[in-house]
Length: 166
Image (tube, rainbow, N blue to C red; front, side):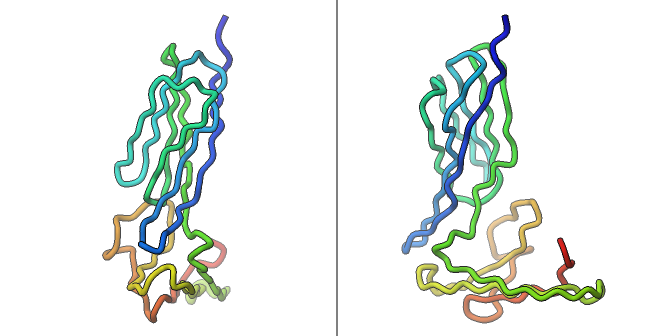
């Protein structure tokens, strides 16, 4: 008879920043059931992240530490070579310790668009300069450079011409 389908239970820890400017989050494989143990876990993602944990029992939580916000994938392969791929595992910013405030206004006229003012209100984040970008589903290269925009006032930027409801 065939083993049960592989089921992966996972969680994430958001990116947090220390006073020294080091960021870290995690992708955690909490448990795996189904298939046939042992399992190989492979987590891939942002900026070439690619880490493998071999011969895991499936009953022990395994943490993959990541330093970049973005989308990750978890691939679990069992002893028979059967696999399951979980895509779009988001390890995200902004963490609450940055005290980021977003004020928005909308204009229903599509030729004008909306506006968003983003401000970082904590000394934990440092003195800047800060670069901001609107997440569009892809992970851009590190700033400076497009799509990143340099703060327009200390710790703040205004995005204009935004499409309402998007």
